[in-house]
Length: 234
Ligand code: DC
Image 1 (cartoon, protein in one colour):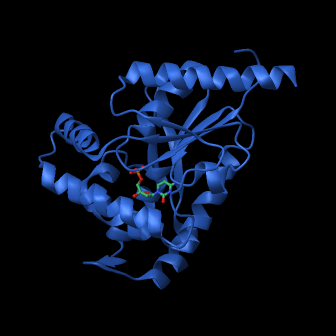
Image 2: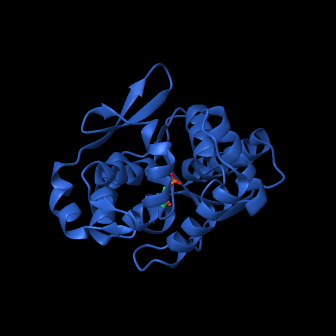
């Protein structure tokens, strides 16, 4: 697709396949893929390890004080995948586990945490050639992204996908537990005061409930090609 590089923002509810689409799109375009949710998960793991989260209670003051001591980065492991590192430790597996999934939405509600991570996300994307997925990418992180995609899928499809993902990692779970976690996170993510999840006015919505991964990828590639063509013409 030539030398022009655009910024692609992908937002949507939990377990809609956003990261899969973003990663595949980035690979096909030879762009950088950033999973912004992994960064919120990294901060949540830090909070769990440092007793900032006790049951349902979060010691926000302590977390905000300790933010400068948290280093979040993505480092390449093998040929394609970049793993999230928390203070230089590879935590890619641990951030996907249940304790982190259960606590990440309330951590992502904290204004200072969002500012801390959004600043880093904007720096990562300043040269373009990036596909970032999350909840506020098209609305807050990259409001000027050339392509914004809002991904949706029905809840039962999402539950099954998350169950399959957990099973492939050898993690035991059941549909009710997964459905509760997704519903709860969707609620918090879309009703919070700070940067709630919402479709940007200029985002293209893709409901992938009945699409294969390949069909979804092809649709997104067509959209990217359209944006690149109009960039070349202008
Ligand atoms: O995409 P994910 O499920 O790994 O995201 C984990 C949580 O992080 C999700 O419940 C909401 C939050 N999040 C966010 O608030 N903003 C983002 N840009 C990405 C994720």
